[in-house]
Length: 346
Ligand code: ADP
Ligand code: MG
Image (cartoon, rainbow, N blue to C red; front, side, top):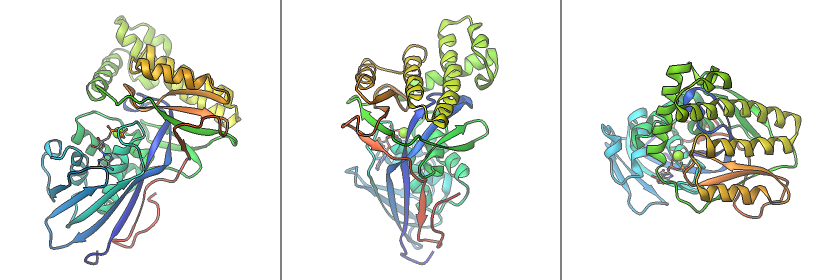
């Protein structure tokens, strides 16, 4: 790296069309990278042993040593994600970094993964999209203490322009899926900040692990298998995962067939399952999904992301919803400058 040559990385956010709380059990998800994302500009200084990060979205800058041993106790809090990435990437030089984003933060469109992937690329991560995603998943787990799956990071790293991604979270195989023409994806914020998301997320993950200890891998289980679970709570949790995996398959098939009405029905069923069986919705999100679903030209809607507030996503006819963010399936993260490597990662 030539001294003071700027490296610019961009990492998109993502919206999950269907398949929530299935990634960490090795199941199926169907997100897409979006046109909104986070830009990280890094100016390396080979003489410096620290990196100073400034975010346009935060008052307090962060000044971090090159070796961060405890990312989860870094201040300010937002820099924990950055510190988690530094612990994974091990940047060779200090310098200055500036972060800006077009994503809403903390709303379920994965500004955290966009931050991690953007910082990792700006600081010189080299590797495949899957390797980048796994490093950033580790970073997020270290930073937040939330045992998150790999969906957000893999979508940001591996997005494909004009396509959603059908991801098998066990094999990490990714299939690009076209959306039917003449439809829109719209995210609408519930107005509710996400609460309890961390502790409840961990509790759901534990429930899934307990269920899997009794019936085997949930990604391989059938509804009949999980119906045998005695504990009613574990039965509901596992039933969500098993039926959600099937809904992801059915949703992908509906997209292939161009059947937006069927795809919308499946989204509504997903919301009901997240509400009743997985218990990660809120009355505000339920009301929003009901309201949005009843509008003319809306094929279906559901909460998206982990739940407990944040956004709903809707599949609509063009122009049917005049609120929220109209989201376009977009390419994954890219970096230019630095070592001269440009363009998207593969
Ligand atoms: P989401 O990923 O859905 O937006 P999270 O709660 O997972 O919500 O992550 C949001 C957190 O990530 C913020 O509270 C902040 O700490 C950090 N973050 C994300 N984007 C930025 C940014 N551009 N600048 C500073 N911090 C950010
Ligand atoms: Mg996040």
